[in-house]
Image (cartoon, rainbow, N blue to C red; front, top):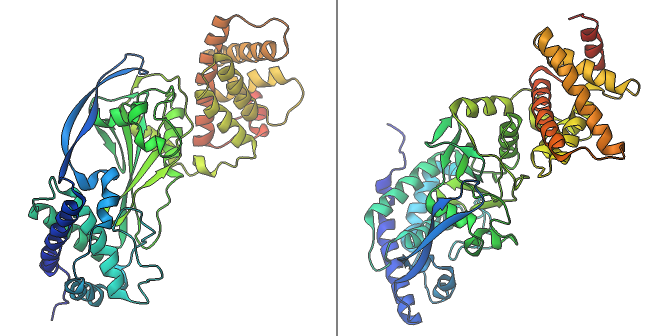
Length: 454
């Protein structure tokens, strides 16, 4: 006889329980003297200034489900009484009987009203009650807040939530999405490679992320939304699958992708936080991570599918970015180059890039520094004799300018520093990328190259 499997028809009694919960929410609203909808102002960006640092926005007042408005939802919750949970226990017990431990997922303390678990309750102590609270309670909250108007039920919304419940309960993994608002990349249409994609922000997202008076997400974490950074015009999205019994912690992945984009020569600004969303949404409370290190001064440049693919390859190399030890010459070189990209002043970019090149090319050598610097760099980076001669001269000029800035009495002219910084960033980018791809070179490698031994 085929093994019994869980299906959406098994969840049907939950629909009637949800409708009872909706009527109780309406009673709570009536007791509080509140309507089911309130007009709320929503904003959208209508245009972004050419340099990416300014914008124009427009606000509209639209009706919104009052249960989604934080100012009201907590007071409503205090007036709300759950329906009798007895009809839910047979469904929960059926899930336990058919799926066993597969029902379990990481369920932390959830602050959204109605989503808390009973303190001390575990799957081992009372599996059916745990399933009821971990699945049906948050879905109820999600259903009530997902209604256009709490006065009207939505069978289509329930069917979607029931399908999500069955799919998630019978599966083994979270489907997690990390979103990184970013400025400096230009792509008219969405691009995607593997689990990474880049898409334009919606006008509503840009308004939320860009306008300090509207940056609710940032003010909650003690930070204004814009703070002098550029307006994020695109969203870098990274998708993961992780075991659902563990808390997902993905803080190391997005910095590697962003660093790889920087290593391709892009100066980007990621002024916001990173947002983690697990799917289905009712199974998690969302996660905010601190902003990535980035510059306020960025350059808007076209970014295509081939660039995204190169960044992904670079971020997932065997000697990938996360494996570079901080307290090492490799770590110093990588850190200084990435610091250079986040610098607003050309002189700081120049000095950081030359230090990065010194860490790669000199590696503890203390004699004939300028000669070794330009010789080793020219032999290691150049593809042919003509380029070798050009790099020899460029590296010598950069090192001399660095010495004048640090040790000289007369500061070089601003334009000379700006031009040198541009060259330094380009050469350092080539050197750091080559080291990551081909391996960090030893001094013996440079000595053999300078003797013409390959």
